[in-house]
Image: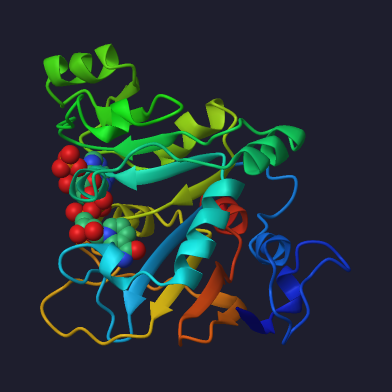
Length: 272
Ligand SMILES: NC(=O)c1ccc[n+]([C@@H]2O[C@H](COP(=O)([O-])OP(=O)(O)OC[C@H]3O[C@@H](n4cnc5c(N)ncnc54)[C@H](OP(=O)(O)O)[C@@H]3O)[C@@H](O)[C@H]2O)c1
């Protein structure tokens, strides 16, 4: 994997950015994807893989699009995150379990003041998740479920009894601000949103995405697969390119950060 381009406005720390053209070792990949330092609120990073023609799945799952470089960055991003957030559709269709990290990655996190393993946080309106699924049974840390008080109380109770921390917001749907507040109160600032398209759409609707990491897999799939985001209304969110990484098999990994800080956008909104 080689770094093709890096934007100097978003280097992690002076002198620590990987060199353009360099072959990237794991440490360099981690630095290329470092979260901004001294975060004062949750930073929402979204990560997806898509085909060249924009499909979010091949054979109904994202796994069909995966490449070694995508898997490597997927693991690095998980290792850097305080919490991994996912929509219930993805948790169900991809049979999500807890995040697994090797001992060295856990030790590095602990040295940095993070929990050894980030919890998986599932957003669901229905609270319809199977307590016998891997989310609850194949994990080092209990999952967090964020839903609403409209979800059946017995379904919420079942998830709690299976060990999950369950938060029920008093709103019709789960808004990004509600997710952020819950994560922030748990001390989670480095957020990794792994999809799917519905949850990404929710965060776009709420103008709550700070960064998009996108792997383009070297395949064209056609068919009827959707895109990486889906929401009822279209809205433009300008992004700046932070870097481009390429692998010999054709995989291209890009990192995009929003042009205007959300804090600036929020304060100018509140001044109106
Ligand atoms: N290529 C990739 O990188 C990638 C990544 C992730 C997923 N995928 C693929 O995407 C597909 C799943 O797509 P999807 O759009 O159904 O996934 P999703 O966004 O993970 O799940 C949608 C579900 O999440 C919950 N949800 C989302 N926003 C919500 C809100 N504002 N309030 C309450 N609940 C909310 C709802 O759950 P309830 O139904 O429980 O109410 C909703 O039905 C799968 O085929 C998966 O393989 C691909």
